[in-house]
Image 1 (tube, rainbow, N blue to C red):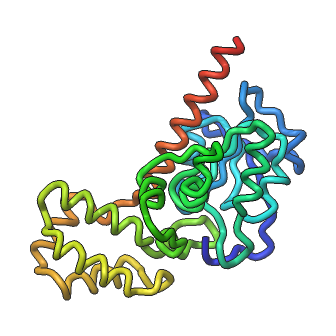
Image 2 (image 1 turned 45 degrees about the vertical axis):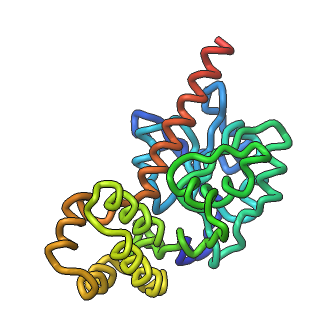
Length: 253
Protein backbone atom coordinates (compact mmCIF):
# COMPACT_ATOMS: atom_id res chain seq x y z
CA UNK A 1 0.00 0.00 0.00
CA UNK A 2 1.13 3.61 -0.46
CA UNK A 3 2.15 5.32 -2.58
CA UNK A 4 0.22 4.74 -5.75
CA UNK A 5 1.97 3.19 -8.71
CA UNK A 6 0.65 5.32 -11.59
CA UNK A 7 -1.49 3.47 -14.09
CA UNK A 8 -0.94 0.10 -12.46
CA UNK A 9 -2.90 -2.68 -14.12
CA UNK A 10 -3.06 -6.27 -12.95
CA UNK A 11 0.47 -7.06 -14.06
CA UNK A 12 1.02 -10.80 -13.90
CA UNK A 13 4.23 -12.75 -14.08
CA UNK A 14 4.64 -16.49 -13.99
CA UNK A 15 7.10 -17.61 -11.34
CA UNK A 16 8.53 -20.93 -10.28
CA UNK A 17 11.13 -22.26 -7.88
CA UNK A 18 13.83 -22.12 -10.56
CA UNK A 19 13.58 -18.33 -10.39
CA UNK A 20 12.80 -18.04 -14.11
CA UNK A 21 10.37 -15.22 -14.85
CA UNK A 22 7.95 -15.39 -17.73
CA UNK A 23 5.30 -12.90 -18.75
CA UNK A 24 1.90 -14.44 -18.31
CA UNK A 25 -0.88 -14.09 -20.82
CA UNK A 26 -2.90 -10.89 -20.54
CA UNK A 27 -5.87 -12.84 -19.22
CA UNK A 28 -5.31 -15.13 -16.24
CA UNK A 29 -7.76 -17.62 -17.80
CA UNK A 30 -5.21 -18.38 -20.53
CA UNK A 31 -2.34 -19.00 -18.10
CA UNK A 32 -1.73 -22.71 -17.42
CA UNK A 33 0.88 -23.48 -14.82
CA UNK A 34 0.36 -27.22 -14.72
CA UNK A 35 -0.19 -27.53 -10.97
CA UNK A 36 -3.09 -29.32 -9.33
CA UNK A 37 -4.08 -25.91 -7.97
CA UNK A 38 -3.35 -22.85 -10.09
CA UNK A 39 -2.06 -20.25 -7.66
CA UNK A 40 -1.84 -16.47 -7.74
CA UNK A 41 0.04 -14.45 -5.12
CA UNK A 42 -0.55 -10.73 -4.52
CA UNK A 43 2.53 -9.25 -2.89
CA UNK A 44 4.82 -6.23 -2.89
CA UNK A 45 6.60 -4.77 0.14
CA UNK A 46 6.02 -7.82 2.36
CA UNK A 47 7.80 -10.19 0.01
CA UNK A 48 9.42 -9.44 -3.34
CA UNK A 49 8.63 -11.35 -6.50
CA UNK A 50 12.06 -13.01 -6.38
CA UNK A 51 11.43 -14.18 -2.82
CA UNK A 52 8.00 -15.46 -3.78
CA UNK A 53 9.58 -17.43 -6.62
CA UNK A 54 11.78 -19.29 -4.17
CA UNK A 55 8.83 -20.53 -2.12
CA UNK A 56 5.95 -21.42 -4.40
CA UNK A 57 5.02 -22.14 -8.01
CA UNK A 58 2.57 -19.39 -8.91
CA UNK A 59 1.59 -16.38 -10.91
CA UNK A 60 2.76 -13.24 -9.13
CA UNK A 61 0.73 -10.01 -9.06
CA UNK A 62 1.31 -6.62 -7.38
CA UNK A 63 -0.58 -5.56 -4.22
CA UNK A 64 -4.25 -6.33 -4.67
CA UNK A 65 -6.87 -3.69 -5.34
CA UNK A 66 -10.59 -3.77 -6.00
CA UNK A 67 -11.47 -5.71 -9.13
CA UNK A 68 -8.31 -7.81 -9.23
CA UNK A 69 -10.01 -10.98 -7.95
CA UNK A 70 -12.59 -10.86 -10.71
CA UNK A 71 -9.83 -10.37 -13.28
CA UNK A 72 -8.01 -13.42 -11.90
CA UNK A 73 -11.07 -15.60 -11.60
CA UNK A 74 -9.58 -18.68 -13.26
CA UNK A 75 -7.23 -19.52 -10.38
CA UNK A 76 -7.86 -22.12 -7.71
CA UNK A 77 -5.72 -20.71 -4.89
CA UNK A 78 -5.42 -17.02 -4.02
CA UNK A 79 -2.75 -15.81 -1.60
CA UNK A 80 -3.35 -12.20 -0.55
CA UNK A 81 -0.41 -10.58 1.22
CA UNK A 82 -0.22 -6.89 0.27
CA UNK A 83 -3.00 -4.61 -0.89
CA UNK A 84 -3.78 -1.03 -1.75
CA UNK A 85 -5.73 1.23 0.57
CA UNK A 86 -5.58 4.91 -0.30
CA UNK A 87 -4.16 5.01 -3.82
CA UNK A 88 -6.89 2.73 -5.23
CA UNK A 89 -10.04 1.22 -3.79
CA UNK A 90 -9.16 -1.75 -1.59
CA UNK A 91 -10.37 -5.29 -2.17
CA UNK A 92 -13.67 -5.76 -0.35
CA UNK A 93 -14.86 -8.62 1.86
CA UNK A 94 -17.71 -9.12 -0.61
CA UNK A 95 -15.24 -9.78 -3.45
CA UNK A 96 -13.41 -12.38 -1.38
CA UNK A 97 -16.68 -14.01 -0.29
CA UNK A 98 -17.63 -14.33 -3.95
CA UNK A 99 -14.41 -16.25 -4.61
CA UNK A 100 -14.97 -18.49 -1.59
CA UNK A 101 -18.54 -19.22 -2.69
CA UNK A 102 -17.16 -20.58 -5.97
CA UNK A 103 -15.21 -23.18 -4.02
CA UNK A 104 -11.83 -21.47 -4.34
CA UNK A 105 -9.22 -21.28 -1.57
CA UNK A 106 -8.16 -17.87 -0.27
CA UNK A 107 -5.24 -17.40 2.13
CA UNK A 108 -4.53 -14.08 3.82
CA UNK A 109 -1.44 -12.98 5.72
CA UNK A 110 1.05 -10.17 6.42
CA UNK A 111 -0.90 -7.02 5.56
CA UNK A 112 -4.19 -6.54 3.67
CA UNK A 113 -4.50 -10.32 3.52
CA UNK A 114 -4.24 -10.63 7.31
CA UNK A 115 -6.80 -7.87 7.83
CA UNK A 116 -9.35 -9.44 5.48
CA UNK A 117 -8.72 -12.93 6.89
CA UNK A 118 -9.46 -11.68 10.41
CA UNK A 119 -12.84 -10.48 9.08
CA UNK A 120 -13.66 -13.53 6.96
CA UNK A 121 -12.10 -16.56 8.66
CA UNK A 122 -15.55 -17.70 9.82
CA UNK A 123 -16.59 -17.67 6.16
CA UNK A 124 -13.75 -19.88 4.98
CA UNK A 125 -10.82 -17.55 4.33
CA UNK A 126 -7.62 -18.96 5.84
CA UNK A 127 -5.57 -16.62 8.01
CA UNK A 128 -1.88 -17.28 8.61
CA UNK A 129 0.70 -15.67 10.85
CA UNK A 130 1.22 -13.22 13.66
CA UNK A 131 -0.44 -10.20 12.00
CA UNK A 132 -3.59 -12.21 11.30
CA UNK A 133 -3.84 -13.23 14.97
CA UNK A 134 -3.05 -9.64 16.00
CA UNK A 135 -6.09 -8.39 14.06
CA UNK A 136 -8.18 -11.39 15.11
CA UNK A 137 -7.88 -10.50 18.80
CA UNK A 138 -8.04 -6.71 18.37
CA UNK A 139 -11.32 -5.09 19.45
CA UNK A 140 -10.75 -2.46 16.75
CA UNK A 141 -9.06 -3.44 13.47
CA UNK A 142 -7.07 -0.49 12.11
CA UNK A 143 -5.66 -0.70 8.59
CA UNK A 144 -3.23 2.03 9.68
CA UNK A 145 -1.42 -0.62 11.74
CA UNK A 146 -0.14 -2.27 8.54
CA UNK A 147 0.16 0.89 6.45
CA UNK A 148 3.55 1.87 5.07
CA UNK A 149 5.15 3.77 2.21
CA UNK A 150 6.91 1.73 -0.44
CA UNK A 151 8.93 2.50 -3.54
CA UNK A 152 6.80 2.56 -6.70
CA UNK A 153 9.75 1.07 -8.62
CA UNK A 154 10.49 -2.11 -6.70
CA UNK A 155 7.92 -2.16 -3.84
CA UNK A 156 10.66 -1.97 -1.20
CA UNK A 157 9.28 -0.57 2.08
CA UNK A 158 10.45 2.91 2.99
CA UNK A 159 8.72 3.25 6.37
CA UNK A 160 8.07 0.94 9.31
CA UNK A 161 4.52 -0.36 9.86
CA UNK A 162 3.23 -0.36 13.41
CA UNK A 163 2.74 -4.14 13.44
CA UNK A 164 6.50 -4.59 13.13
CA UNK A 165 7.00 -2.59 16.31
CA UNK A 166 4.16 -4.40 18.11
CA UNK A 167 5.76 -7.74 17.21
CA UNK A 168 9.22 -6.51 18.23
CA UNK A 169 7.99 -5.38 21.64
CA UNK A 170 6.07 -8.62 22.19
CA UNK A 171 9.17 -10.71 21.48
CA UNK A 172 11.29 -8.50 23.74
CA UNK A 173 8.75 -8.84 26.55
CA UNK A 174 8.75 -12.62 26.26
CA UNK A 175 12.55 -12.60 26.34
CA UNK A 176 12.53 -10.41 29.46
CA UNK A 177 14.44 -7.59 27.76
CA UNK A 178 11.91 -4.86 28.44
CA UNK A 179 9.29 -4.10 31.08
CA UNK A 180 5.62 -3.80 30.06
CA UNK A 181 5.58 -0.12 31.08
CA UNK A 182 8.58 0.69 28.85
CA UNK A 183 7.17 -1.34 25.99
CA UNK A 184 3.89 0.56 26.19
CA UNK A 185 5.72 3.89 26.18
CA UNK A 186 7.74 2.98 23.06
CA UNK A 187 4.62 1.76 21.27
CA UNK A 188 2.80 4.99 22.10
CA UNK A 189 5.67 7.04 20.68
CA UNK A 190 5.78 4.94 17.52
CA UNK A 191 2.03 5.24 17.03
CA UNK A 192 2.37 9.00 17.40
CA UNK A 193 4.42 9.18 14.20
CA UNK A 194 2.25 9.31 11.09
CA UNK A 195 2.80 6.08 9.14
CA UNK A 196 4.13 7.92 6.07
CA UNK A 197 6.74 9.69 8.24
CA UNK A 198 7.78 6.63 10.25
CA UNK A 199 11.10 5.99 8.50
CA UNK A 200 13.59 3.71 10.29
CA UNK A 201 15.86 6.67 11.11
CA UNK A 202 13.08 8.82 12.52
CA UNK A 203 11.67 5.92 14.52
CA UNK A 204 15.01 5.04 16.09
CA UNK A 205 15.75 8.71 16.88
CA UNK A 206 12.37 8.98 18.60
CA UNK A 207 12.89 5.81 20.64
CA UNK A 208 16.40 6.89 21.69
CA UNK A 209 14.89 9.92 23.41
CA UNK A 210 12.63 7.67 25.48
CA UNK A 211 14.93 4.86 26.56
CA UNK A 212 18.60 4.55 27.47
CA UNK A 213 20.82 4.06 24.44
CA UNK A 214 22.32 0.82 25.72
CA UNK A 215 18.89 -0.68 26.33
CA UNK A 216 17.69 0.26 22.85
CA UNK A 217 20.89 -1.15 21.36
CA UNK A 218 20.25 -4.38 23.27
CA UNK A 219 16.73 -4.58 21.84
CA UNK A 220 18.01 -4.02 18.30
CA UNK A 221 20.77 -6.58 18.76
CA UNK A 222 18.26 -9.12 20.09
CA UNK A 223 16.17 -8.96 16.92
CA UNK A 224 18.87 -8.04 14.41
CA UNK A 225 17.26 -4.64 13.87
CA UNK A 226 13.56 -3.90 13.72
CA UNK A 227 12.04 -7.20 12.59
CA UNK A 228 9.66 -7.37 9.63
CA UNK A 229 6.79 -9.49 10.86
CA UNK A 230 5.04 -8.93 7.53
CA UNK A 231 7.88 -10.71 5.73
CA UNK A 232 7.92 -13.49 8.32
CA UNK A 233 4.19 -14.04 7.91
CA UNK A 234 4.34 -13.83 4.13
CA UNK A 235 6.91 -16.61 4.02
CA UNK A 236 4.82 -18.74 6.35
CA UNK A 237 1.72 -18.23 4.19
CA UNK A 238 3.53 -19.20 1.00
CA UNK A 239 4.99 -22.34 2.56
CA UNK A 240 1.50 -23.25 3.72
CA UNK A 241 0.05 -22.63 0.24
CA UNK A 242 2.77 -24.79 -1.31
CA UNK A 243 1.84 -27.59 1.09
CA UNK A 244 -1.80 -27.34 0.01
CA UNK A 245 -0.81 -27.60 -3.65
CA UNK A 246 1.41 -30.61 -2.98
CA UNK A 247 -1.32 -32.30 -0.94
CA UNK A 248 -3.82 -31.80 -3.77
CA UNK A 249 -1.31 -33.15 -6.29
CA UNK A 250 -0.82 -36.33 -4.21
CA UNK A 251 -4.56 -36.76 -3.79
CA UNK A 252 -5.29 -36.37 -7.49
CA UNK A 253 -2.19 -38.27 -8.56
